[in-house]
Amino acid sequence: MILRVFICVAVVLTAVSFTPSRVGLSRQRRAEGEARWVEETLKGLSPRERLGQMLVAPVQVEQATGERLEELKRQLTELGLGGVVVRGGTPETLAALTNELQRAARIPLLVGADYERGLRMQMKSAGTPFQNNMGVAAAGDPRAAFEQGKVTAQEARAVGVNWLFGPVADLNNNPDNPVINIRSFGEDPRRVAEFVAAAVRGTREGGALSTAKHFPGHGDTAVDSHIGLPTIQADRARLERLELVPFRAAVAAGVDSVMTAHIALPKLNGDELPATLSPKVTNDLLRRELKFDGLVVTDSLGMGAITKGFPGGEAAVRAIQAGADVALTPPELKASLDALEEAVRSGRLTGERVDESVRRILRAKYRLGLSERRTVDPQAVKNLVERRDAVESARRVAENSITLLRDGRGLLPLDRRRAASAAFVVVAADEDPEEGRTFVPQVQARVANARVLRADPKTTAAEYDALLAEATKAETVVVAAFVKRAAGKGTVALPERQAEFVRRLIATGRPVAVVAFSGPYLVRQLPDAAAFVVAYGIEDVAQEAAARVLFGDAPARGRLPVSVPGLFQAGAGIQTRAK
Image (cartoon, rainbow, N blue to C red; front, side, top):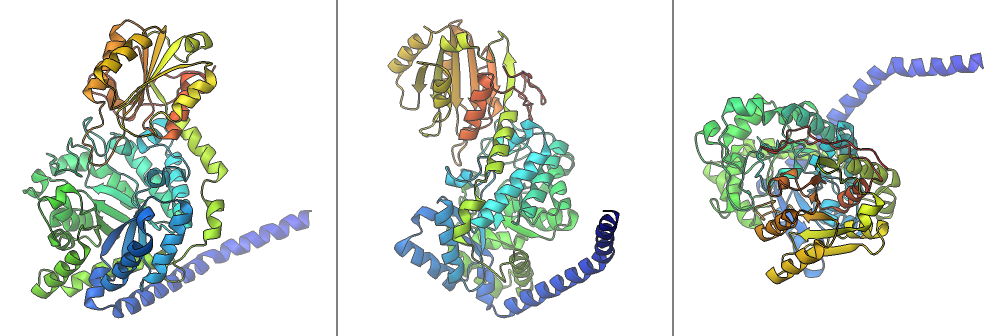
């Protein structure tokens, strides 16, 4: 036994003693192989094909069939596009589609996706069910952000996606922000930086490109950039103290790409130009001062903040001039490519500037291993997506995120008697079947003959009166308020008619507990509720977690990652025990 241990130790020591030189040699060979592939590939591209590498096309997976698929493949080859951004589908259909697109392209494709909270952000019913970022921060452990990044990257690579547009590095320091909100880890720059850095490291360990967004910070705005151009009145000192802190942490953690924001910063730039199109933001601040040399990608050039002021291909030209490497989903791909080609001819862009970006793009593709293998194994998808251990871990994080902000009458957790005599009212702000589809069955599984009522955008004034009369027959009322955060919606508040209905319920004197399946700022509309719980999203995983806390199957552990002006400070949260 002693001899065996000695031999084992000797082998380990020998391995360790030779590791540095082997690692150094391996790194050198990788660097040489990378440089060789990048330069040979670049040399084989025409000037127009080089510009094509800087453009990324949108793909709706369900629609990419038949003639549409053939047209997409023609675009890839004729325009020489560098990548695609995918939405929707199932793991199986997406894996099949990315394989077909990769085979059609002469140069391997970057395949990007907005999987900020995992594949379910786009697929709805497939992928590990992660909580939104604000909920992850409410649960309190940055290691959860690392695991979420890692698992999401692994699942993404399994279906052919290699570039993740996350983590969100914005501080949500404006309660009226309709576009960031629960996508942010919070408002405290140092705390957010911890979670962002952890998510970057996890994403990279999982094998995908990570993206910190939206530079230099999209949190302090009340305008949705999908609709119009927000203006942030922050000077350089304020940015340095707040918004830039998480981005610096992302760069230090090795983030692969940074996405620029469609926001105006007049005190920084001296003009109303969107940051995406501003050399002062990309070249001066991000490249020179933060010393970031990875990929710079624009936010979608199809958003209202850009299209209203820069139609056609002008936005793509301006973005590349400003220092971006990739123009993301311009609304007119061919027009954008033509405009870029004309910009080179006229001298607005130089060939050297274009090659600088194309080299970065090719380096990213090489580091993803796409030079050796660009397709995925469709048979392996089922084993790699929604692994049991990942699903259980994600559910625990969601459970730990549920935040009890107020419980003045000691309503929660609901005991058996109070639950049996309660009315459960689902108030759905949107026509989305996800709103209540898990919460209601969770209630019904625990309460025999549960009294469940529902109000939605189609509910009439007379129906609200009837709901009020029915709900007030109960001893206790639990309101499950659902507000979906959606691009272009412009708000994360309950419609006023619905908010007024809940206020009327509260005014009856019945004890009302509100569970906010949205951001925590909803409490401003309902400040007099006896109890208030925040679940940080409408997703099924949040609905299940909130039900477990509501009925005492799990304790309330969450802490608020943001402040609600005049009501709660960051860090608020009543801790309870499970029954």
